[in-house]
Image (cartoon, rainbow, N blue to C red; front, side, top):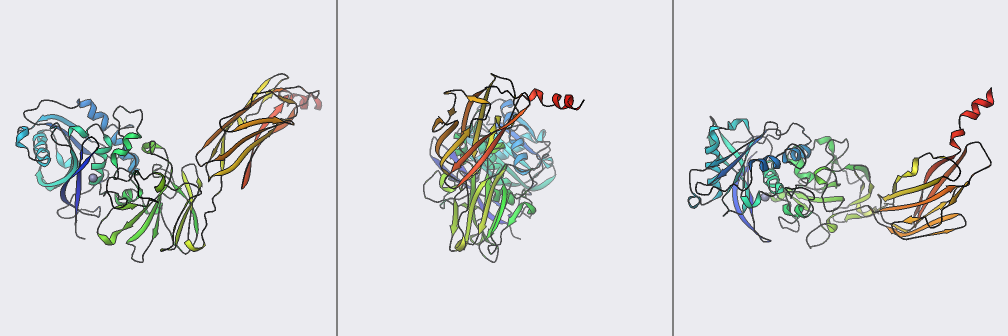
Length: 508
Ligand SMILES: [Zn+2]
């Protein structure tokens, strides 16, 4: 197989404008080593170097700061790549060296490649390069706004090969997401397109890398990378074949799709839907949930990419329902939504969320509808057994979350159990209204969208019963919406302290 020429883009971080500077290098598409190509070892350590030009002594950050960027715990980049790859030992032995003073002054460097090369030689006294797969170079020359990835042919410590590197200028060193983007290139990842543009997709580090910054929260380093898209992980060799569902369009199929951030979980993590006989054009489907390094993604749902390897471009293109950035809602399929491609006779429907992803149905477009329904999961005091005495206050609460498609005209009704009395005005709902009549509460909440949670609660007192034996009563929450119903039962036992002892006494 021949090595493919590909351009890696250095983007220049201005205030809001992004300029592009091109560096070209040869990387092989397969993960296997080729002549004149970078050897990709997706478990090997990296070495990180800090270098300053001879006439500027400023160090943009302390050594500790860079150790923080590459930490083995969230939000560090070693932890990031371990989660992304599903390999707990990836990058074991990675090290940071610096700050080194470069042999030349700022004005003598006309590009960042020269800085990188000098930095690598300057650190050679401390670094045995064959121990490492790739080299990250942070430098202090403020003239450069572009971060980049590249490689150069060189003999280092007796080994002549192409050495892959990233080059990170001071202005970009605040954002681990940028470093992850450049490292992603070294792991064979190409930019994700959307409407033929780069740096626009809101999904994955190889799209609009800095978009993640606005979603990152609570981290002093900021701009924590989200996961790469499933297709890029597959190219890096991080999604094994048994986790990729190869869909046969002739047979409607429903499967559970685990999110890309649940890499240690069993099950399918990616779906490929062939669009030609040669296997060069296909859709990829992946689920995105707010977990791990995807905790700050803009929304949860299923995203779809189209790959076309007949063009020579190895990246994927995000499928979006409109032409306007930032490509979030229109590129995201949630329960009840479907993508129908009549040209290729394929339909994709998202049914409902699961614990770790989404259930989807793929079928021929001609006979497909999206048969998704609302689906409620619940949490709260719903499974407690109450041990009660007369006059005791019991408060019930229920959190309902719709993990399926839109529930229209939703209401919840509860009949107050025998032996208890409703405490007037104690009912609460986080949405809609509540009424009490004829011994029953009715919460009227109207539409409940996918992912929406609804909290309700109310109180009763135990009104007492002449019966000294345990009284088993159930409290039933009846949820109704236009196309369905769902019940949740809260067990309740009055006089529970009498449950066992009378039985014993009666026998003897
Ligand atoms: Zn790039």
